[in-house]
Length: 260
Image 1 (cartoon, helix red, strand yellow):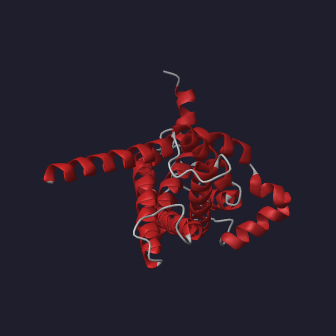
Image 2: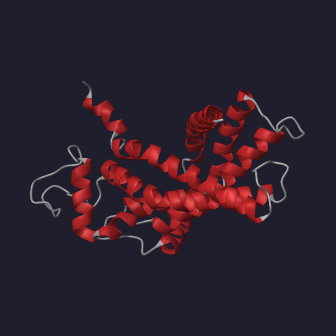
Image 3: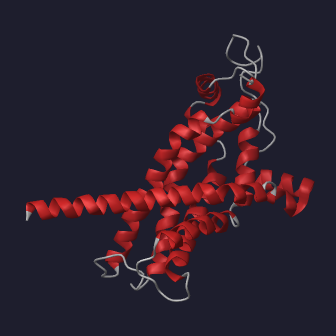
């Protein structure tokens, strides 16, 4: 087996394990708050024809993204530390006494070293830009998805099909990354920083240093790759989300018919 090629996937395990949890939190919190916001307007059902539907979509998406950040931040921190290895068990200089190199860093080793160096708060380095990214991205994502899905053909379609759903999911993935890529760049730089000798004091300091070195272009490095990746990822997520919703409604309807 070519371990050099496997290195391209280093740090993938922990985010992969957390991905289902992240999507459950985002869509679950979003749906709960959307229904609550719509009920405050006197709407018993969530429909695109309801008053304030667009505003409530955006607000509920922001809340869902904020809740998701509680898991996203430590998950991505561990991934980045495994990929970069900066400030974590650097040979025999780390807090762990055994010699550990970047090549044999494990998820458990990274977890232990982060906790020993900074405690629980060590897992939330870069939390502020993560919240900004996930909150704004979550709002933009669900708003663009639902609008594209229901208005793709120029007029309201209350029951969009599979084609509209998949296209809207891919487009929403691109749209949601446009306003938040700078926050993602800042977050990644802060998390890749050396914990023992940090370069950045916080989000603002990181932003200023990045701007001095690369101007505004530095905030959008990797944007093309992110958008290309976001299309298949979000098409898959949206398809799974809508399929599960349909199955839940189908089983609920069947259960009600049996009771009757």
